[in-house]
Length: 239
Image 1 (cartoon, rainbow, N blue to C red):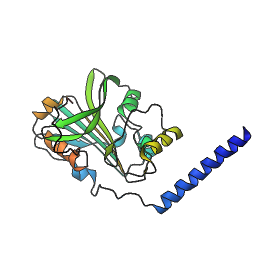
Image 2 (cartoon, rainbow, N blue to C red):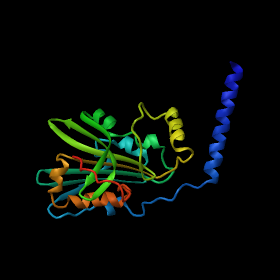
Image 3 (tube, rainbow, N blue to C red):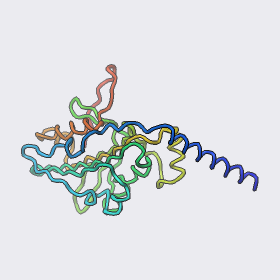
Image 4 (cartoon, rainbow, N blue to C red):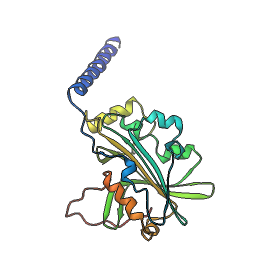
């Protein structure tokens, strides 16, 4: 037993040294975000009231969590037009800045619920289309609090690809090993966490002038899905 423990410890030590050597010799990928999020997402839309809130004011976060997550760029911008509300939350990390599981740990399933919201519905990796714009498959949920509900789509992009939310539990060393199994040593991709929420569904938002500009800004940050010419069009989902 003692010999087995020594062998296991040696293997872990060797693996750690190998990873350190790899990260020292192989540079991380180049980031794709080249301008501030605040300049990409529209801050003026005719007929809309738009304001930026501190990240700590979002249901995902708090002053302590925001500091801990150590974003390279972040935006929490809310749009109001008559009785239509749209909230757009984007957090960004440059390549190698944060582990994949820590970056994706503040989903509505955890932080919104902890902050008093009730999860009414939940769907995983569903298609999202807006007219001819097709975004990456989204996580979707309906969350309610104090008599009102929000339809929420969210994405965690790792190197431009949606990160799976099939995992359970909190980020830990086992989660890191699972990431190695899925991504190999390629654990230094840039990351976006994007959340789009509204009190209206997508069909209603399509009829609201100006909403298209919000969707187009998500395309600009890299959320549009690459689709082959032979792929059949998908029906739009409801927000």
